[in-house]
Image (cartoon, rainbow, N blue to C red; front, side, top):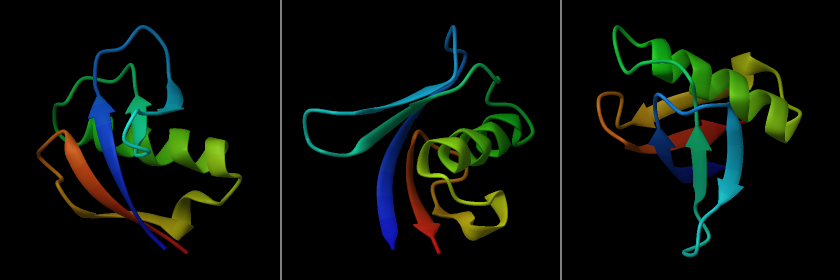
Length: 72
């Protein structure tokens, strides 16, 4: 399954919410430097969805706020 998400880096806490358009908004405390925020996004989605981290990968948008994530 492929999901479109929006990421908020430097948030006060890590959480996932559903936006008005139905897409997921993932807030992470990590800064968007050297892939730290992307790693945290995968961790937070893993906890939220109850899936192992190895089953979640970022297909598009590694350097942007809007990402396409594949969940196996």
